[in-house]
Image (tube, rainbow, N blue to C red):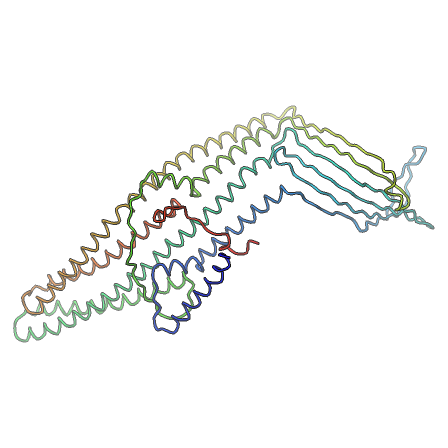
Length: 498
């Protein structure tokens, strides 16, 4: 029921959201809105879903190999007209034209035995033979009411045994990679969101600065006429006004470019302008590096991939040891059979039949082929083990640095917010003093304006870094430290799995 409700509500909510916003001049989106839409319809999210579906069906196919396989085989009919060599009763051979037709049906039930690598089968069949001569047709039947057999490699590489260890691991790996891909989508959403948000802020700052410099320039012209300021100061303010005008045009172009990139990422096709609402709430808590590393080892695809690579290397060593060596295969069949000229008699008093064979393969002189294969496989195994050990060290170090960066974000945001407040107050004070004539140095006003602009942008950059670090921590550990639980997903969200 939960899956059904989600499947119904999510499209309805999204359609309603865009229908309501389409009636407005501007679409307002929060960071949560952007992440939600991106996870539903961004190209990266759709690609991640298709990749997981492929892995899901690969795993389903693997499990199907261990289930009984019921199969019907037949030839209906097989007609043959040819000249064949026929051995007569006296032992001599002659060539004679033959015309015959065979029709057969066989029903078999096969079951792979993963632990031993063997195969157990049960079958039944019926074959009809029609011999055509110049004047008559001779018909006979061969029935096999039941056949029970077993095929067992004795000293061969057991692919089923290793697949039973590796394939479930690969499926778990696909699940974790899908979750990490979704976190990657969130991280890309944050970058697109803040790129556009900063472009909006830069546009607003440029418009505000242009308005301020226009006012200051008009005031300065009056002061220059009265002889209260020098011509150089008037020219400086005029230059600032021209630069502010150019900055407005550049900011508008940058805004349009980032708006296009966000819409393309979210696959939004309407032409409505988007206004982003900066996130106001942040979550601050201390994460222990040791806890994060443990969660990463338990939850992420990286740690699981280390296990997969080591298992596959061990499997290849086993394959090299089993192949090109003494080999044997046991094949045994017991069944019932009967032949008759009439179908009604084909199943009367069936005769038993048995077949047992033991095939062997003994390489006598291989010029070191088997030994070389084993040594190469063992060298590859050691190479993978060394790589995995080094990658594990780098993996833990990366988690440690991510945790440290996240833990320091609270103070960084606090500093950036305070700097923005101070710079804004300083600019307002300097601007007012300049307008009433208490500050005559235009460079001091320029510096205050530059500091104010940079401090505002620095605050939102710090806010972006916070959210990037927050989702980096989620991705690298697949653990939500705010809710204190592993990140997971519902298979019903993927769709097309049945």
